[in-house]
Image 1 (cartoon, rainbow, N blue to C red):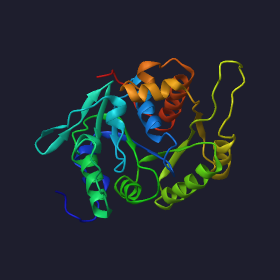
Image 2: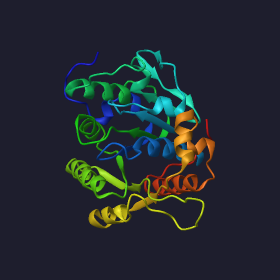
Image 3: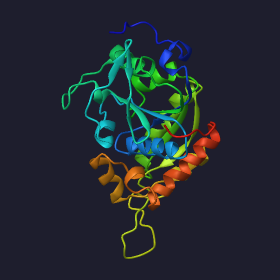
Image 4: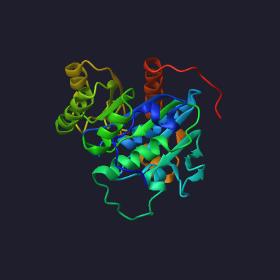
Length: 272
């Protein structure tokens, strides 16, 4: 069990020595589809030929194992965790090391220790990107990542509603306080097509992503539509970028991955 000392800087986390970029996916509130974005962006980056890891650091509701159909706990080698491999990703989640279906009362130092262990005590190996799915809000997990990984890029997820924008503003302010680079915004649940018209229906309002983009001078990297295939893919263990990568939402994820790779460039490698 890790002690409660100050969280070490990135260079002292041996598991991250060969990780070129860390991309933390964050949101100010729950229910905006942050994990869906993290999973499908990671898959889209892998489809581009990058070596990608996915860390589910949502201590309050780790859902990546369900979305990717992972049931087994990670292996161990020389006191280091071995990430699972599926769909071209290397994956670790708190949901893989806690008892299935049982709530875990993570608080204060325990949160920092758990995330620090998943970050640094894992054999991530040679990665272009480690995508980290943060829990919502501006509490201990986000602060832990900010302190541990000051060079990480942040991808903020919002929905069009004003209530979501208010929470995202607080999260942006937190990361700016730690001088972390926010590489852009993604607006989820932007619109859908009912099948009877080609006009997109914006049931949650419109313009939220654009408003934040203008307010904070951040690029809006993409607007994800409401698509039944997204929910079905997450429930079945085969996410959208595996089950239906060429649908409209899949093409948006591909475009987001392309923009991320322009901001955080890596040499393209053969998929492993």
